[in-house]
Image 1 (cartoon, rainbow, N blue to C red):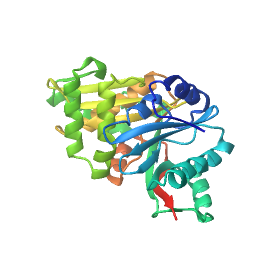
Image 2 (tube, helix red, strand yellow; image 1 turned 180 degrees about the vertical axis):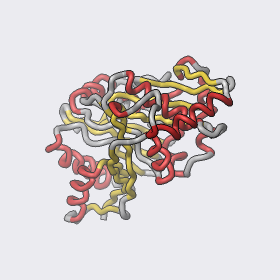
Image 3 (cartoon, rainbow, N blue to C red; image 1 turned 60 degrees about the horizontal axis):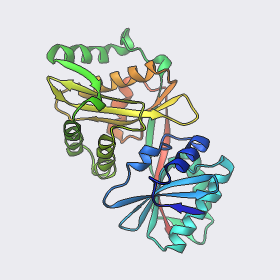
Length: 301
């Protein structure tokens, strides 16, 4: 096992590993890169041509980004190697993991029978809505889309609206959207996502396929952005922010986001883990199904 702590120099190796074994929405080099900040450093654990994306916080907490970059039948063994290194070898505090249900069940089976590790508490479960773009009507015609159609009509009646690529906007104006969003979100979202969003802006949304902003009456009010999930025709809408200044702003941003994703010929759109209130909002846009992700910590016994 090799550990790459300079991911600028290791960029080619990491991207090649993602190209070969990428399987989930978090498998994106720039999503990984932008996790780094003053209190968090990113590390790539390399097992021959396999790999694992991780972050170590100054507190001694480690985090795994997405699933293991390896054939499915090898992921669990590489995950155990990682645990041995950080919890037994380095004697760090604990590991934070957020993964889909199948990989969670595999990890949970290990922990139940382990004399070395344990889950620190019951996992938090989040639901992710997934949209079938074939069913998305950008014109919002018919009774199914009546409420959204009325929201859009009223919003355009009250405001002068322009939707433009986020890369064409001054970074400070985009940063202001992030800071205004932060004030209105739960603590866990503020702490976890804010620095990453600011880094995406700083790095000109590199690694994304779409990055757009709604400008209302001359003010930048939203950011939506995301990328292709590796080895699929599916899209991850990783960033969806608005400054809460106008009723209907979230609807306008998401209508545009789904429309742009469909125009790029993606089949499905993953709209990310959601708190209960956020999930209810996302249901307005007609997801086809939901899947669970589990958020939990592992530490030594």
